[in-house]
Amino acid sequence: MCVCGRRQFLGSTAVLAGAAALDSAGTATAAEAPAPAPTAEQDHTLALIHATLLAAPGVRPPEHDATVLVRGDRVVATGPTAQLQVPPGARVVDLTGKHVIPGLIDAHAHSGGPEGVHPPLYPLLGVTTVREMWGTPTVRAWRDKVNAGRLLGPRWVIASTIVDSPPGLWTSDIWPVPTIEVRTDAEARSTVRRIRAEGADFIKVYSRLTREAYFALADEALRWGVPFAGHCPDAVTVSDASDAGQHSVEHLHPLLLSTSSKEEEIRRRLDAVRVNPRDPSTMSRVRGWFHAVHDLESAATRSYDPGRAHRLFDRLAANGTYVTPTLVTHHTMERPETLPSSDPEWTYLPRRQTAAWPAQLKELTGERTPEESAHLRDVNAHRTRLVGEMRRRGVPVLAGTDTGTSYLVPGFALHHELRRLTEAGLTPAQALQAATVEPSRALGTATEAGTVEPGKAADLVVLDADPLHDIRNTLRIDSVLTRGRLIDAAERRRLLAEVAEAAAAATPPART
Image (cartoon, rainbow, N blue to C red; front, side, top):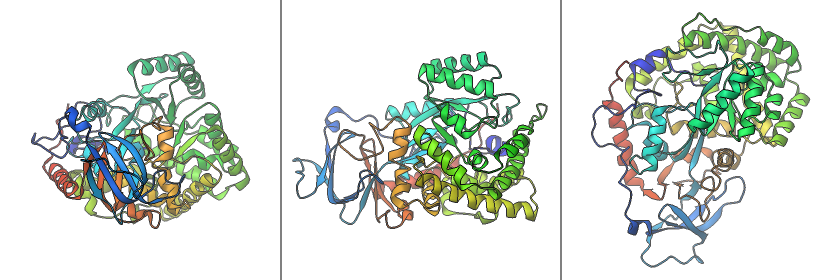
């Protein structure tokens, strides 16, 4: 759940929507990609030879001493280097000792800020596809530029604005793209048709949707073939959401409640949670909601029922319902004492943004007693165990970060989520699968992304070390291919330096 403080939105460069948030300097930056290549260039062949290829992590074993042939923006062939003939005139890159994986996919992000910072950071960190969980004009404009070859950035799958019921958790004080609030069957159905006409890739559902509105939306979305995903509403159980066709459940709040032996009692308490419609502050509304939900999660953790959990997970697996745990953002919210006071990654964001994070987090979480902090440590550890159990029961897990939230840097955050997934019990191959194969299926991009094979997009990451030995090796990036463009080690260093310069030079957006 991305919650960015008012100061972050108004007083920093983390402009997550509204008018295009451009670099103030107006000079060439890493975000500026070369103009579309001429036809002759599209026929150029690149041969990556002597690599260890992880063509489908978690699905197929590594291929040693392999070659990947790329022509234009497509993979045209893969196979043993000794057997695959390299066409005359091809550019040959020897990757002896290196590992090639598919471009990574962040399945839950909220992108914004300077154009010279956020879009290029994703591919420069190996994240070549992003699912945007709150559609904004800015990100849609970035997607158009990326697709036209005028901006270095990821492929984007973009949600609608949030659909909630009043009084929702979001007011107009932080996010300039308003939520859509619906109460009735008719309003929900009309909203589905509106979103479909506007061309969003999917509908984003949210926490305070009423049961009437939710099930009407689900029915209408299925009628029109529009996916819906997001939060599991407080008024709806996870199993009911799965049965209704919700494509993915974001975050782990509802999973904890539905795996408790006291779920009925806890849900009665959840039904009593109210949002003050006269409170104009998003931070205040969300803080109150988090406080109430964390109390319920603590009770659910203490009453965890393995049998109930297994039945739920089996149901999710049978329905093909994806779960995006966003462990990194749960960790930020629940273990603030472990967060760094600085980090080299922060160089790639405007200083005033990172400097504001501690105060924003404090404003969001409020004061906690030692007892509350201890309970949240237990909840956080329980979440982690729950993810491992879900994966063992066959629930398809997606690696998503909630980038846009404090302490998460675009691109870097996904690598940290992979580490959290292995801490939950996933193998490194399974963690990589959650950032490649599974999200490509979930996002409907499996014909383009997720694996390295002929006919698919040439979105690849070249690593200096084996990620199956240590998932942290996904950060040891040598070079990246994005849409067939090879960004080698030297160019990548140069472009990252330009991102850092753009972040340092960025000025706050004008208030409107």
